[in-house]
Image (tube, rainbow, N blue to C red; front, side, top):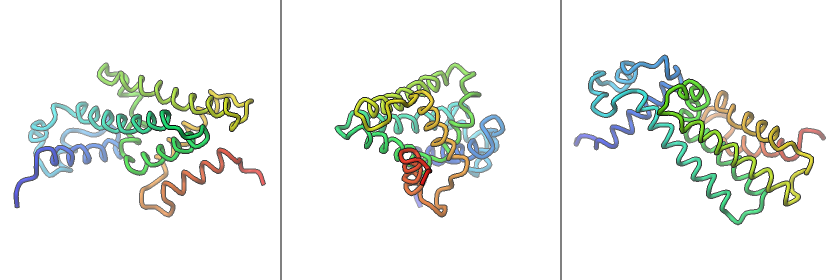
Length: 195
C-alpha cells in the first residue's frame, strides 16, 4: 500500500488536534497528546507543524474562511431579507454539525488565543460576525419583515448566543439533525413560543 500523501497526513493530524483541542482545551493539550493520538513520535509532528499554535491557527483560519465566505454569499444574494436571515441560521447550524470541533475551539478558546498577537484576526472575525447579523436584522426591519421596535444589538446577541452555544450540547448523528434543530430554532425565533 502506498504511503499517504503529505497533504492527507497533514489533514489527519489537524483533525486529531482539533478533536483534542475541543475535548481537552487548547491549553491542556500537549504536542505529545496529539502525537500519541496520531500514533507517531512527538518529534515527527514537528515535520508538519512548528507548534500547536500553528495547528490551531490553521484549524481556525480554514474554518472561518469557509464560514464567512458563506455569509458573504448570503449577503450578496438576491434573496429577500427574511430568507437571508434564515439561510444564515441554517449555515451556522451546518457549521456546528460539519465543523463541530472547530466551533467548539473558537467558542471555548478565543479569549485565551486573543492574548497572542498571531490570533488578533479572531477579534476581526468577531466584529465581522456582528456586522453580518446586524446587517441582516436591519435589512429585515427596513423591508418590514421584522418588527421595527427590535433592539438590533440585543437581538443580535440573542441570536449569536443561542446559535453558537448549541455546540456545547449538539452532537452530530444525534436524535435530531442539525437542519431540524435549525428549523425549530427559526420557528421559535420568528414565531415565538406563545400559543
